[in-house]
Image (cartoon, rainbow, N blue to C red; front, side, top):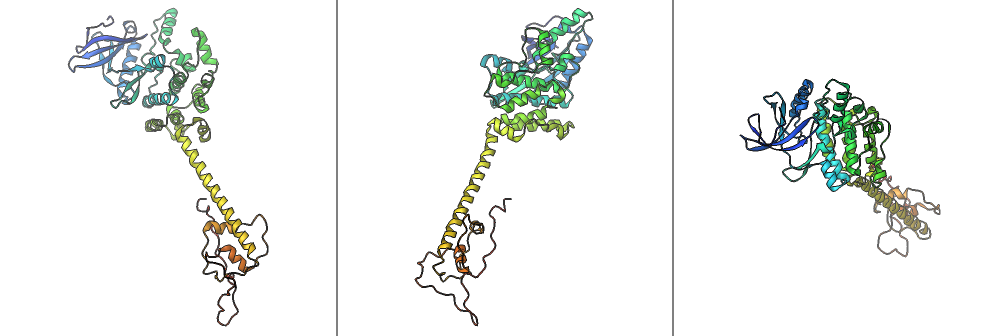
Length: 451
């Protein structure tokens, strides 16, 4: 079978309109469904890939798996099948927009919050795929397609789940070397070290590496590893650490650098164990949509049997994140704590001021007898003042009598002080009782209820 061209009818119902793209192993075309009058995208293998039965079988398995992924962040699969020649095909929704590779070339680096939002949307698709045992193996900006929802909000869709990574060995050593080179030319910049060593020795942590590489590029405009030849690139990825993102953009928070660098650890055991743990650390950098995306990712992975311990392998603590993100969510927490400290400080200052005033009045009342106010009739001081009055003064006050102690505990009323002291009524059959002899009630610590 030759490559289809414009006007050809596929499977008796799809009329090809134009070629959208050609890769190393397959082609994507725009077609019109003759019976439904709807445009679709059709992907199928190129003739040179059809000579290998393993490649054909793998294409079919991946296509059937893609049908099962229901996330809105994966291109919707409408149908799968085989042409009369036996060549498999996959019919998908036709997307309008551009991939993030084109977005970078045309508009440059993305704002941090927007880049993180796009990456988290891609992680939602990866979470559902990983829950089904599918590893993408070819995540890169060109495979992240930016389109719009019906309400105009951006939506990233992940393309090419495991299809463009099909290798087609043909027998001879030279042919195998050429085929492998062609099969990875589109994505070696985003490959993990273990994938460089063996395309079969990959798991979901290889996709975590790719996510970190994509985010690195979206916010710096450069890939972590750059080289002129393939051997040099492999050496860098296998043995060298990438430049720090903040050496390219110093204004980036240290916390986002820590997240990216953990994704790019050579030892996959030191990376995030899954996209759920990664999403937890990324969510704070996209305060509008990030937490919701992280929660959806966690639920998807939890439903697949992943433990909460695996999902909570965070790279950041709250103090590090708060000091580096500058996000509104973290800032609000710090502001509320600051306000609480200010109010507590003001309360303590007011209490100390009241202590000073009361002690000064108490010390000056030695020469003035107590007014005709009994302890029982004295107004009860507020809890704060009662606590403050029980606090020792910085300067020891002069010796006070019970009457002056009452004066300190309860200020005199606003009426004028009488020129002559008035004694309390003499109780029947007893001596006069000093006005301040009643014991004040125990003080209440105003902070005790908060502790």
